[in-house]
Length: 557
Image (cartoon, one colour):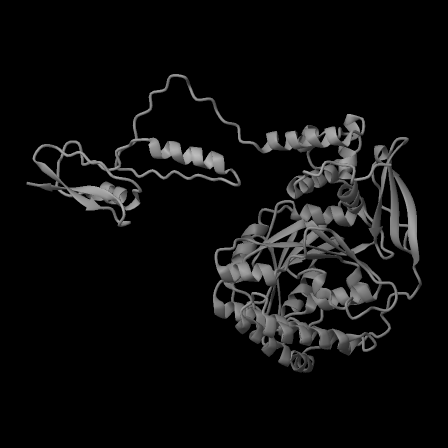
């Protein structure tokens, strides 16, 4: 066996992350070489075993901005999968016009969940992916969802990474830091065996309604989205959290896969941000009240107390978040429970289902399995009675190492296996072509990484006739340095020693005054400024703008 610790210590985190991603891609393609130059040019594996999906954009114009709706529709046109544009209680024909040749459906019931349920009725594929206005899917987004469902037959729900389209304001940076809908760059599996804890019920950690997908069959078993949630003017959201909770309580598997990436447009205006944060907290407390309504035996009160305590502490500590934002959240939290009760009076909500509960069975500590990399990776499904998986990895008859995967009784698909093996054994695998010499392998890998991303400089011709730059065009010299004082000192010494004319009048027209170039030169000079003038001009001494150095100014006699 080989240990990761028996390796050079000068490994940068970025190089290690790149190596892990390349190794994970190679693990899904048996028979390919292991050296770093080959890994850098290895394409993605062919999409086999993927399932058909329908993409549903669910709209409620009482909650969504028109520009976000139009942006998402234009992005969806680039995808080949079936697309459904579902609108709840349409006020006009704008969305239908923007949809064009895409399938458009509408419902007379209000709320985003009503649009989601209408999209479920309209879909005929095995899985359905939901997005919201403002979301911008990448080209491979839908294929990644289809492959994830194809790899693991027990996977029932999938969420993915959500990143900002752009960060142009400080307020957007604060949103990304403290309220980001993304859930990190590591895959995570969610599932329950037995009674849930209050932390399990905090399903906002599972994913975002901007980027989620489900097998269509689970809606027949567990019910659809709660119409009393995601109601404009009342509950404002919470529908996806409620469905995630039902999945976990039923013992189903949810996967967070960061490769399923979606971009979204962050709000900019202060008023819009505070209003959205207020709605988000109203939605969360409405979700808690919906959970009490359907599953009274679950520990919802502990989750409520934790969230209330966190809001109070955030108002005191703030953690870089404006306190007026936190105050808006507290206002939303105060009315959340009341808003859901009012929504129940208007909508036919889902009935209580206290019997929906994952089987309460004790889990054994660890399952032990073996995998041969020469034969490829297959899903491991016979581990439902175990808490963790110890996987011994070998190539042919030679052992490579072992990895431990915490799965809580859920199956583990090929992509999850590849990610776990690459994360824990990537340096051991890179050493295979070098006789398992880890030092040599990583040295060659570092050289290959540097050569791959180093810009290729074109050779300058030996004899070149370049026209000189116009003297009126200012030129800035930017020097970048880090912990190299001697080199910086030599560079600055050579720059200061150069003699250049920093101010000159037009060659054909002599006019009085300094002109823009000389004003700039006087403003930035750090030594005595020498100036030459034609006959008939007088050079008078004048200090530069910094007040310490002397320059000259020209006046006509």
